[in-house]
Length: 259
Image (cartoon, rainbow, N blue to C red; front, top):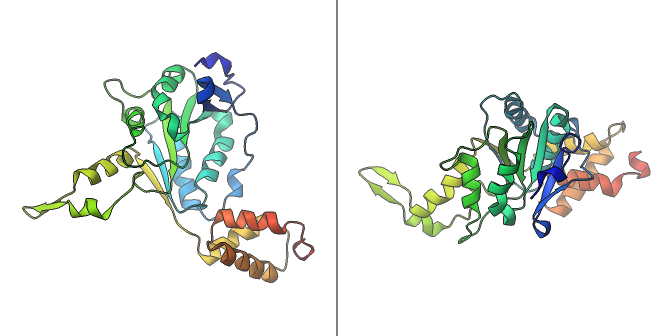
């Protein structure tokens, strides 16, 4: 990889491409703005505080955003970059299958005058996979400490990033009145524990879902029919979340009833 191919002064984000063994500048960023998000104020506040500390060179954490699908985890990361790119934040997206290349990526950016978030979307590991070992090294270092200008932000549907089986719990023991988790559970938890800030996301309540819908139709005065249609749409999808609200907007934007 040759970092000179990326003009980081003008390029806020890049993605690792395995076929070229290097970084490619992202040409079309998702324009989602910080204020476009709704229903996740607590998570926004915590992520912004951690990122501002990172940009200021203060102690800060790697971040795991975990929870239900479609609840805004990935959108929050995209909006974060748009909010802080002019303050020196840069982002590199790395697929789970390419985590073995993390040490090489970090070596190339550790001396640059920018703050880099290594972004892993939809991160999880199955039994027998070993890619998490390179991730562990970047999160907490080995003999060499991780660079101060690099943090890892990951999203996942799994709290511990690895599958959890009932059989693992059955192997736990109680000795002298203390619970001793099985080795498999210790392994599952040890990776997630390296993310000092963990933000949870849950399915939206009815009120929060309709709040997200309303954000897409800001100029509509009578919302009764909009809400009825939005709830029918969510019932058909079987889930209420930010993604469903956005899909509802795409389906009904321009409908004369909601113009």
